[in-house]
Amino acid sequence: MSRLLCLAVLSLAVALVAEAQNTTGKGIITVQNAKFVDNACREFQFAGGNVWELMEAAAGKLQPDGTAYLHGQTVVQHLFSQAVADNIRVIRAFGHGASGNFVLQPSPGDSMPLVLDLGRHPLLHDQAWTFTACFTAGQYNEAAFQALDQIIAEADKAGVKLILTLTDNWRTADGLYGYVIWGGAQHPEEFFVNPAVIQLYKNHQAAMANRVNTITGLMYKDEPAIFAWDLINEPRSACDIHHPNATCDAPETAAIQAWIQQAADNMKAVDPNHMVTVGEEGFYGFGAPAASIATNPNSDSTGWAEKAGQNFLENHTPASIDFAATHIWTDNWEANTTFGVDPKVFVNNWISARIADAVSLNKPLVIEEFGKQLPVPADAATIASVRDPIFADIYAALQNTDIQPCCSFPPSQFAAHHAGVAYWEYDYLNGATDSDNLVRMSDSTWTNILQPAAAAVVQKVAALPVVNGCIPGALMASSGSSGSTASPTDTPIITSSIVGATSPEPATGGVALDTKSPAVATSGRKMLHI
Image 1 (cartoon, rainbow, N blue to C red):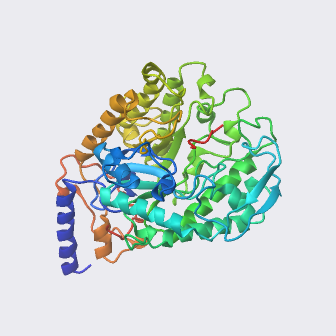
Image 2: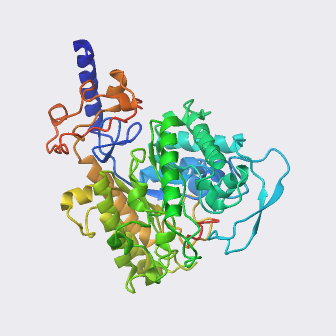
Image 3: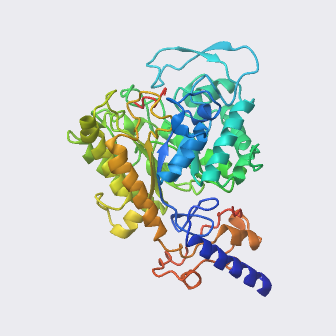
């Protein structure tokens, strides 16, 4: 590198560090040194939330309970401005339709009924199902895309990041069932193995990455508001709690693993800038250690979760998967009876095992979806005694308290890998719908747990030093590096001597670079999961 370029990039480094002293979360978030970092090498951790039917709301298809609370803003504008005020830094949402009323890939003509062999799928209870093929792969609803444009643009304006799902395993629009039909297949599990079906999914990945936002003018693959892509919301085989005695074996789990590898690699090919994760619940499957399988929500001796097609550690091993993610649904999985004790024990065991795996993978862990069902309506005493203890435990884990380290990892390393949580469900429609998972802003869960925890995370991150060994995104652009071509010998690296960090972190084995960092500076309600 020339001396002039060295001076230029060093000056840029100083400017980036100065900016980073006051803000975090700027530009596209990446993973370096097993931490989320922004484009100025500030570590990024978050308290976040899940929202339902956000694309529909952005298109005006959903109406909140009154409009006075919006103060003249749109629903989407209010969501993100309120999230910022509440220190909710990441919102997870479907990047597609959630019901057949408003879809991203619609049909241009009349629908044609098709009868598929869907017998063993968990939602169909061994019954043949007549599916109306009312959607068409690759033909997009511009109104739906413009709703996504609005969501991304408003999130960026507010400084909120988005985790967007690319499709859904459950019976929703733009989901697994549609792809099976579009590809001419006959069973839902062909989604993971049928070449024609897989190609249609890959085509959609490319369409999403290359979509030009009508508001920002950027392709989605260049949008700084996008935190990550979920490949699919909660992938499963047919072998789960509904069919615990079905003949299911390791090849089904292996097929999903092969699909994850292929889908993640392709997403990185069409969008090398953003992070990718699976989007799964996080069960342990065939071949996992017995101690790991013991943390599954097996409510009886059938081991349904082991047969569900997931294998948490293996699923997050590919290099094209940037971080590990898990969901927690003690009620939907019937986990309350798993250990015969308080579900808090289940939650503690679940989180501990998966953080330990994240440490072994040297990747961050995000609990990207969790909730606790309540009767509707629920009184204050029920909320405080039933839901609040579970939420308190999960947020205590994020704040590095309560959850005990396991295995052979030191506590500091164990705690550092738990980088984010997103609860279900953020109330952006002012309580317009009754839901057994909705957290209203008048609930003790919100005032006593979520708000203080989110504020604590922001304060914690503000005090963290710049990540040692990190390559700022803007520096990579200036040095002519791009993605995997970056070289530690050619690209300046942020170190404690540059940033003046008071407590620099030691590099792991002297290799602390993620050379795939981008060169860009910049329900109804909840579906039943059993």
